[in-house]
Length: 251
Ligand code: UDP
Image (tube, rainbow, N blue to C red; front, side):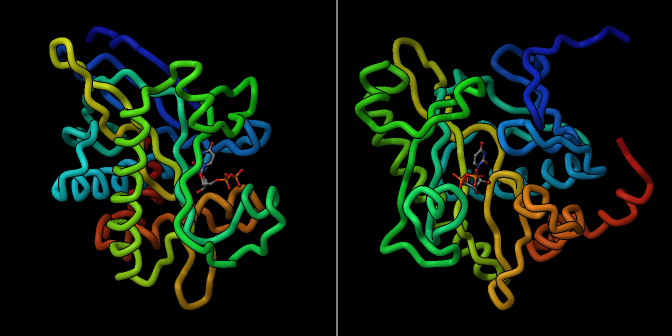
């Protein structure tokens, strides 16, 4: 067996060379990090759950015309994706005040926002992903004005669709982070959704109890992290076999 080439290793995922040009394999690790990687843990089974949840969401988004990098799931922890040139921005959409916006603007966690708000953060771990404006993005050439417009339109479509999807299973979509990439076709490039969408990158609250079912359980030491991620998957109607997979310690 030949060792495949690792292209990139991040905090929660590894990218390997794909079977054909223009493809990559995205591997979901069990590693969890928070507060710019100052807090770290291994949450057994997290990668398996996030692989499935992200597959489910990306597949559905593709079906409603939100083009993304997902091609197909390969196994418990891996998916085949399109290779993209990552736009160095984290795009956050918020519906309800929580996390950094609550701290920054002195809002009460749980307070509905007057309307959905989109924020951009520059992806740079050394700088702690600072929030940036469209002025910064165009001045430093991280993305063009048209690309910003495309990302904002797609982010709002993702928000509308996911709010409904989660709302239908008793989960409130508080906020989420997405990333985009460019695919080149001749002289032109197009923006598509990339990365992952999972409880690692969303705030998801039980609609009745407001119980947190996302990474805040890890950030705030609330316990039952994997159980909550599994509950999200169970409500979405995926991964009914998950508990045995976790107990079996599949890696
Ligand atoms: N988020 C993320 N990765 C990051 C920062 C934020 O996935 O590096 C997600 C986070 O889980 C939440 C949303 O983006 O769903 C907004 O996060 P916020 O700005 O409130 O920052 P945090 O409170 O996570 O520091």
